[in-house]
Image (cartoon, rainbow, N blue to C red; front, side, top):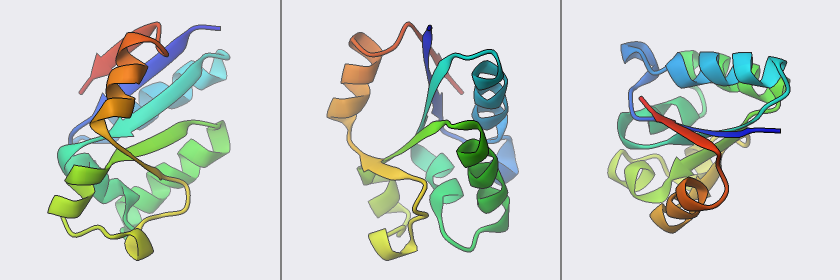
Length: 109
């Protein structure tokens, strides 16, 4: 099964749903998909953010793996108690591992 890494950098209100939509389509044809949130995309991981909650619910429903960059979270004030349970905090080291060893195809949006 091909493994996809979709790196999303945009806020959900600014076109950041692209990786979630593509990831859902890829999961429907049985591919393994990880969505890695960086920069403003980490706002999707905030509890209580309606646009993000909708995306996260769809991601959970379709079995997407969701990771968020710890530095981007910290810079935007999204601390652990404000982070949705569907999202795992990650770091650039893990992103490099995903890019180099654990993904067949990476797409940055």
